[in-house]
Image (cartoon, rainbow, N blue to C red):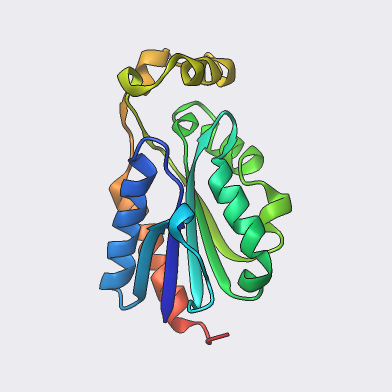
Amino acid sequence: MKALLAYASAHGSTAEVAQRIGKTLTAQGLDVTVAPVQTVGSVDDFDAFIFGTPIHAGTWLPEMTNFIKGFTDQLAGKPVYFFITCIRLMEQYGYDHVMEYYMIPEVLEKLNVYDKAAFAGKLDLKDVDWNERWTLAARYDGSTWPSNFDGDFREWSKIDAWAEKAAAELLAAPKT
């Protein structure tokens, strides 16, 4: 089965997650192409899709939204997996908040989404400009000291487990 893993990434953390998922899917037997969404010109040659984006200013990166909207008709009926990376997962009740408010149901409901996941990301505050810091502060829930969010919080074992589960389901699914 040929799968496209297309991702958007602002600072490289989501790109690293996508590369890791791609390696796991390949190790499980899928033929995977991993690419930034802005470099993908066609989805015609793929049987399944995995998409990933970080959350910035409370939403997906625009290139991911534009990509999915641009290819909705070609993606229809094919298996889709979707993940986001978001530092907000580190907050109390963060996972529930992220899954409820950051998955953009009006976009995802048009796709054949088999599963979606949210993973904590990596935040290096020295690389974040002041405009982005402002949006982080505006969305901060106040339950944890903000400096506790400066670091790498990606849980590779959870990311690998999600990718392994996706691979098993895709390999068992009939081709569309």
